[in-house]
Image (cartoon, rainbow, N blue to C red; front, side, top):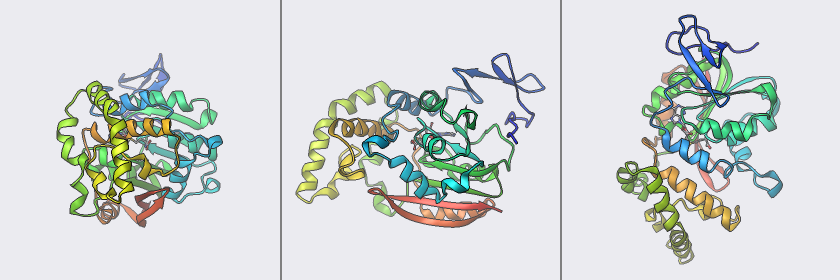
Length: 322
Ligand SMILES: C[S@@+](CC[C@H](N)C(=O)[O-])C[C@H]1O[C@@H](n2cnc3c(N)ncnc32)[C@H](O)[C@@H]1O
């Protein structure tokens, strides 16, 4: 059975009429470029809208070139199998350009409901509409105001998003609420590992960079990425790689050693460096704290810890809604 859409503000059902989703009180959510917009489109995620529309294809897997990072991360983070997802309703929150939407649509027979708060939904639509036919529904909406009744989904996943929301625990609560009793929730996020986590170029420079215009920040990164990549590699060669945390660059050599051609490596570095410096919110968390948030908000924790995925030690919490 299809999941009923609701107006998150009043719980009333939404029906499609004249290019919008409309409730019985006449509240309208326009469908713009094929995607229903359930929120104010100008919000704190404009940086993500910019980056994912500019770098729409960069992080989408290219299986024919042996690149399957997103597939690997999706299945290892969630612990789910394609077989168990067959015919299930799956919610993805914070889908960005749709690297994981693509995996679910191509590798499973699940029905996928994806949302993102930014105009990245347009990149996801361009990348993935048409894959999976009517198994794919996409909305611009916030994790805090989702257009679905509580208890709707067999599975809920949210990858690389929670640290970028203003209230981490409220976000975890919102994800758990949308799972059915017995439904599974899986998240990955930036971890706090110790006092040194914030002794990093990112946290030292972010107070400045997050206030810069996105155009200016992007130009600055593009102008400097070349020498920074060179310096980062040189430091690693002379075993001073520990100093790389003070170079304001996401070092693709370390994230994906040997995994990318040189031109792609540069593109990933620009994208991920912009992603590191531009967000309004960046609140890493300790894994044990996130596990507690799961328990305090109605889920039993089935895994809380780190998994080596590619070259990244990824912080993961999984749970089942009680
Ligand atoms: C770092 S990106 C990750 C995108 C995708 N999951 C991936 O890993 O490629 C974080 C995404 O979270 C989205 N986001 C931030 N706050 C959100 C919110 N309140 N509700 C829904 N999405 C949100 C952003 O718009 C952005 O696309």
